[in-house]
Image 1 (tube, helix red, strand yellow):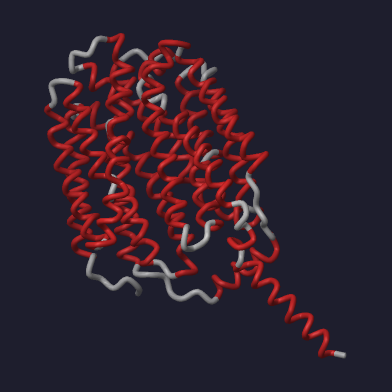
Image 2: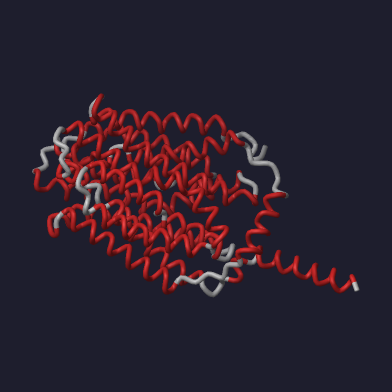
Length: 424
């Protein structure tokens, strides 16, 4: 009598394990379609988030801020608020994705962002602007949710390609956003530009609701994942991991330190006032364009000569490229240097992600990649704040010297820990 019951219990246990370990197999019919919808959603989200860069100081001024110092500081705070919110809630959304599935997180992010982006266009003062930007980060994160979904659904042998395509969509959004922000306000007004951004994300939300598919088993997947963590080996070398996370933060810090106030910097380069937003959009887009040109090649170079070599080399080169940006006399010189900086930055995040995966144990790789995303968002928060404070107290030129020095310091730290064992 007990034998059949035991056999049945064993079959249930096997079924639980199979359901937990074959999530990608259960979604093999969906992942390609999901990928392209996630690319579109990530693209529209990044366009909407980055398009306000060229006109953010102008919008802050419209909301009643008058002095240049206050405009610079509020612009940095408003821009960084979104990334602060995302960094705070990313671990929470990750846990909820494990419990309820990846698609609900995509829908939540898209719908929430569409609503908040439209509300930003109705802000009455700069305080409301900052609160709404913070709210956008707290409930948003479509691109991060997409990484979790595609990274777990795509077959192991195609996961790198799929995540590369997804990254290209986000990068393209960062490239197009400032260009849209440089042109659209002059056509439909600044406030209407936010409504247009909200409408784009609403389309992505609708596509996500209607066409994204997921075969998720909450009970079996959650229990199997908990069992895996219970038997996981010791965490990888903490010093190496902390160095990688710190470096990832510095990459975004360096890129974002000047962008929220770049319109003010360009205004000192003899650019006419009515062309400021458009010129700032072009300059900021050059960084993303440069990254698109070299990201794949630097990733392949890391496979050939090692990730640490690429990381340290790119940190040094980017730090050096920062310096001449403080001495430009024309906007096109700044644009060219930002493009060159984007080319050197492009090899950093893929190489860091590769090392994080190798440094972390198999059962902890998802968790550590989540921490990596939080580190990147932290850099996007700290960068504008540091840029604003330095710009006010030491001058805009000093922003380039400080961020360049921080990148060189990260290169020195990387060189010091590169030969440590990957696992503790």
